[in-house]
Length: 169
Image (cartoon, rainbow, N blue to C red; front, side):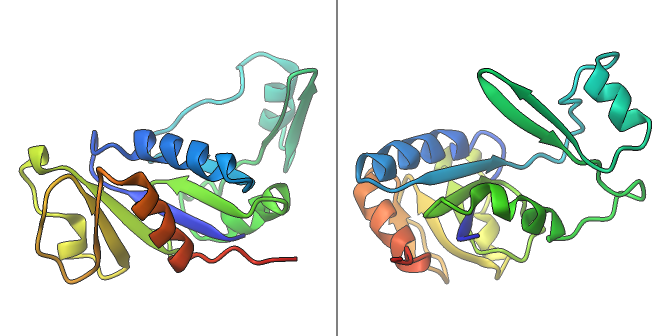
């Protein structure tokens, strides 16, 4: 999976940037997938429904097919351990995508770009996290990694394609 994590502090503009990038890239003919990572627990299935009962009974994977959507639920280890095997599990679903943009997941070994806003009043995460490859910023900042202007989506998109080149078939 050709993935890039868009990371940043709360309210830094991650969702907005990803949405704009999806529109930009798909407008140029690329097939883009997205994954939202969160550290909060969300019950994505509906308690009491059949699929939820299947999962609660111990099913390793539960799928739901309906006219408008397909979903798969896979429980994570009960001990809360994290690893990148979850991305490997999702890879077949995203196999036709040229690029997968993941919102969040600072703990992954995957490549990351930070979105940073001056209003946060905090230093960019890239100041302390060497796994971040670049920063998208709303003002000029000094950083040890490239800084891309938030005001120029085409520059951001071009730089992303330099970091995560699209493989031609």
